[in-house]
Length: 478
Ligand code: NDP
Image (cartoon, rainbow, N blue to C red; front, side):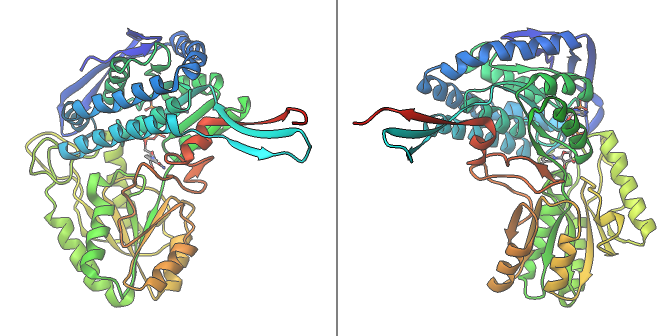
C-alpha cells in the first residue's frame, strides 16, 4: 500500500515518510505513508471549513445517496480492506472482513439518519407565536482515532458527522493508517464533494493540536492519558468534545451462572481480538462456589486457542498490534506476578513460523480488586480473576475502579441480573453476554474517565454532531 494524504479532493504526499510493519511478520512492510507538515494540516482544516456550508446545503437525498453508496463500496471491497486490516493491525482475516462490513453498516445507518433528522415544534406562551427547535451542523469536525478498530471506528465517526452536514478532517493512528486511506478512496468514489472529507497523517500531538484548535468539534477515541491532554487543549478554544477512552471492564460470574455460558462469554470478552477491545473483559469477579471450576475451564480454553498469523485461516487469536503494546503486555503480566498474581494460563510470547508479536491468552488468579493489575488497563489478552463471597461484594469490587466503560454478569437469576444492571456504574451493561460486542444503532460509551461528553452512535450521533437552535416566531394573530 502506497498511502497518501487526502486534502480538498487531492492526494498529496507529506514531508516525513514512514512505514508500517505486519505484526504477524515484522519482516514484512505493509504500507508506505508520509506525515504532513503543519501548513498542510492547516490547509486540510481550511478545506473542510470552505466545503462545509455547501455540504450542509446539499440536497438531502443526494447526501443520503452518497453515504449509502459509500456503504455499498465498503461492502464490495470488504475482502480487500479486511485483508489489509489483518496485515496492518493483526486481527484475523475473518475479523478484518467483519469489521469492514460493520463500517459499511455504519454508512448505511447514517444514510438513513440524513432523512430521519428531525426538529421539534412547540406552542408558545405568547399568543401569535410558535417555537421551533432545530438541529444544525456543528461545522468542521476533527476525528482522531486509535489503532484497534482501523476501519469501523473512523467510519462511525465520519459517517455520523457527514450525515448531519459537517465536514471532517480525520487523523488515524500512525500504527494503522491504511484503512483510513481506503476509506478516503471509498468516499471519493461515492461522489463526496472535494474538501468535505480530508485525511491527514501526522504525529498525534502536533497534528492533533492544530486540528483541535481549528475545529468546531473533536471526536476522539484513544487512551485516557491522551484524552486528558486533548481535553486540556480543547479547553483553550472551547472546542466541543466527545472522548471515548480506556476501560477495565469487569464480568461478574455468580454461583448460579450457567457455567458453559459463563466460560464462553468470559473467554470471548477477554481474549478474542487479542484482548484489544476497549470493552474487553480484564477483570473476572467470581463467587466462591463456582470459582475453582470456572478457573479450571477458563485455563483450558486459553490453552486451546490457536494463536498465530492473522492470515492463517486456522488462527483464532492474531498477534498483538504493535511492538510497544506487546512489550507493555509482557510487563503487565510480570508486574501482576510481582504483586502476587498466579499465572494459570499464558506464558508470554508464543513462537510461530514468522517473526510476529504473538502472545498467549493469559489468565491470572488469586488477585485483589485494589491491585494495580485490576486498576490499570492492559489492552492485551490478559484477564485477572478476583474471588468474592457474593453479589454484594461482586458489585462493590466491580464499581471500585476508576474506569466505567462496560460491565457484565453471568447469572441465571433475573433478580440478580437486574440488580447488577441497576447498580453497575459502567456506561454499558451486558447480561449473560460478553462485555465487548456492540451494535451500531444504539449509544456507545462510558462515564468519565472512560468517556467524556455525549456518547457515540445511534441516537447519540445527532446529539454530538449538531447544535440545537431554538427559534421564536411571531406570526401574528391568525
Ligand atoms: P492513543 O491515545 O495512544 O492514540 C489515539 C490517537 O490519538 C492516535 O491517532 C494518536 O496519534 C493520537 N494522539 C496521540 N497523542 C495525541 C495528542 N496529544 N493530541 C491529539 N491526538 C493525539 O491510543 P491507542 O491508539 O494506543 O489506542 C488504544 C486506546 O484506545 C486504549 O486505551 C483503548 O481503551 C482506547 N479505545 C477506546 C475505545 C472506546 O470507545 N472507549 C474504543 C477503542 C479504543 P498517533 O498514533 O500518531 O500517536
